[in-house]
Image (cartoon, rainbow, N blue to C red):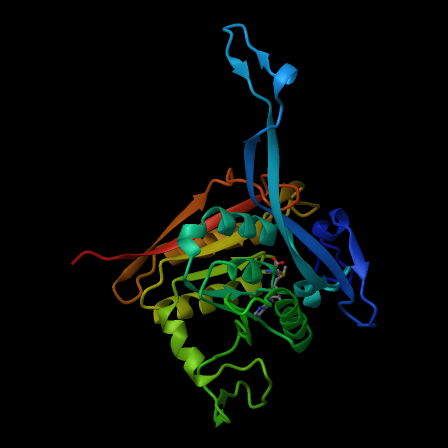
Length: 316
Ligand SMILES: C[S@@+](CC[C@H](N)C(=O)[O-])C[C@H]1O[C@@H](n2cnc3c(N)ncnc32)[C@H](O)[C@@H]1O
């Protein structure tokens, strides 16, 4: 991604068919159907009588049909944005994270989760098919409203969990501000994406934190890790944090080489985290192999990575 005012278009939208919404929206205004495989199974075909062949050993060679069960998530988004609105697009790392979530349904079933930098909400909406509580957080009215529209569009089954869209700015303190009609104010103003008092207490019972494609600017990365550490320290039963990233390689004249300084900085932040102790915990960091089943359609390149951070009790 570039830091100039240039318009950036996510590969996800280059490779998916999209439709323009009827109503005119200045920054979003497009929708894409993200189909994904729930399950595929081989079933015995209805080949009988003369259609049945035998193999060299005389065993029946029964033809099998592959049945693929699919579902889809419909996401409103933008088609190309400046850097400050990249959250209005869907990024490949989010699709990798969604694949991982669906591949580990038993892990995420019934859990309480927080997404940082959730953008238009695809990963949170996917997670909501399994979890009990999902907070999808980001910053800025446009992104939060588009995310809320996507939640309303996709999470209509009352028995299932509906992600709660909330503002969580990595540069700001969430837990301060005055009370107003049950909402907590942040930075002195009020809007519907502010946290309710009881929701803040749920943050102390998080099972998982997830984030996708939040590593693209070192200042933001530093703020992200500070916020992550703060939330991790306040979550007493946190099991793991999953961060999906895309390593964006660039050739620079300065280095006369292909580099990814944002990725190097990310790895340095991870190493620093691994050397920290919070309450009685240290943090174990590992990269997760991405050979799990691909359910969404995108190019799973080796630049896509998934990382796990796990609190580990320090032995006395
Ligand atoms: C590249 S987008 C990724 C969006 C989504 N996770 C995805 O992968 O499709 C980065 C996200 O980080 C969010 N972000 C940037 N700065 C932030 C901040 N200070 N606080 C919270 N979120 C921020 C952006 O608004 C955006 O949604």
